[in-house]
Image (tube, rainbow over all chains, first blue to last red; front, side, top):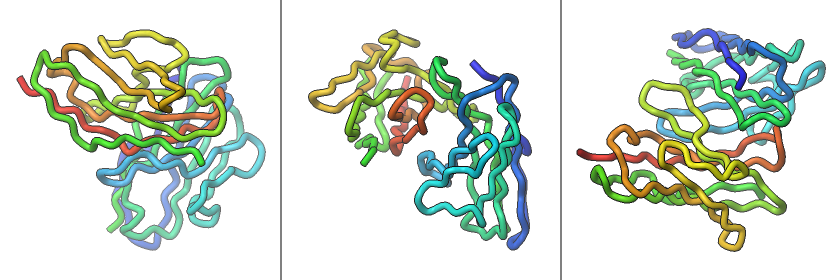
Length: 114
Length: 109
């Protein structure tokens, strides 16, 4: 399966600022996804990162708040913009390859907004 | 609408006891079902995929289309099985993955 490097692993940010999270994969993948896991909650899909085009956002998530880039088949970024304490969460990158065994997840970015 | 339901937030058993973590789903079509596990301080990892029909770490799960269920079972729980277990669904290969709310399994010695 693919190996994912997600950075940073954690950060503490001031409200009103923005943080960009990077997801680097060791091989080309078909699909890349961004999830949020709020404290004590399950994983919620934010968006599907599309290579060369705008990301596909799930209900409740918008591009202005969570801009996503995917310039190639091995890399994506998620930005959490104009942060508030409610954005404190773990953000996870996930990838999938056509014909592969399931989805692989990064180790996550633990974000605390103060 | 796509939905995955895990009715139990917490399941506590003693070592050696049988375990069944329940998962029901709602999907119009033929879904792919998965079980993911998250051990303490570790990343989420795939445990089972219904297409593979295999047993991993003694766990099995059978897809019951009539009951729209994909329950995870193990005949004899071990302490190292203590973790968060998530049932998940996707519409087709590499489509987005939808998660249930998770069940925390505690296995006592």
